[in-house]
Image 1 (cartoon, rainbow, N blue to C red):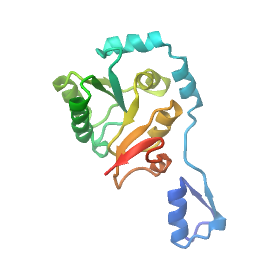
Image 2 (image 1 turned 135 degrees about the vertical axis):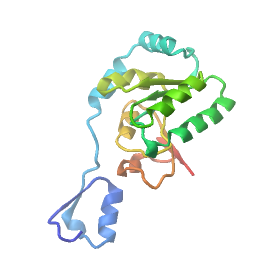
Image 3 (image 1 turned 45 degrees about the horizontal axis):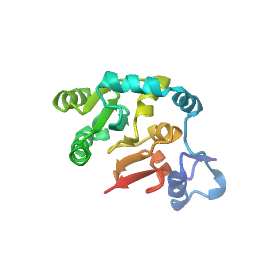
Length: 187
């Protein structure tokens, strides 16, 4: 750690780790790892209520139904089974709850099976760039019980809170979640 001339830390967590391990603070910069979300946020703002209503109809989601969104790669560290189980618990308390799953990866079959088994789960497959925006517009929150990374910025860019679980393998971007303010991290 002390052989580098300069450290660019992703987030404050990384910076604190470096300093606690003897890296002098004067050779560090906290860059707050991020992506440019301006275009995505602008695209989301331009989606009309009529477009959102049309998407809800296509998915089979009522106009007043509550919608949670998972938008990320589908692989084991994302904890898709836990997401479906949590969705079932929510559905028991909120009968008009729907879960929209956007993504692709090794656990695609789990998402497809959940959608086949539960009419309130909607697997739409992979969407990229601004093509994800309509799904964020119909959602009230983003659910990701597993590894949270840069996707947290997409949620915040369109004003959605992020709900996750305390998980030891989150990306450093989890630091952007302020429990009770812009999201929830549960035990």
